[in-house]
Length: 105
Image (tube, rainbow, N blue to C red; front, side, top):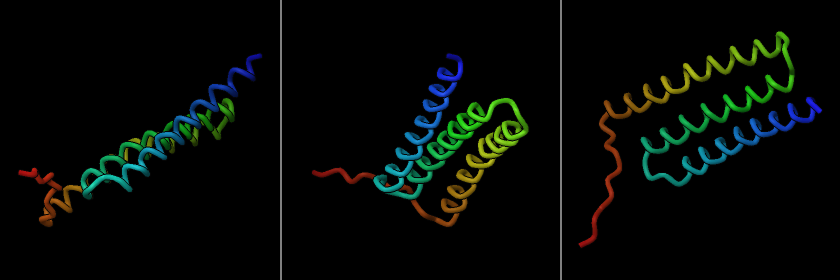
């Protein structure tokens, strides 16, 4: 019974991670400029990878593999937002202006 519940929770974490990866990809394809695309992919990929690694950690049980997966998750959660911010700041400093909606009339 407990294995069935743990497998269900694992599937929920993996499906949640997949959902955030898919929404980040849609944001990358649909948003109008670099800044909004970076925002979508930075947030979505960080959360998607974290949920997937958490699900894999639950699936593998308490072991050294789980510790390695948690270390990877912490590393991704620390570095991905910083990298996204650094890229967007560098592009802004180069003079790329954010997209502005033009108003008709």
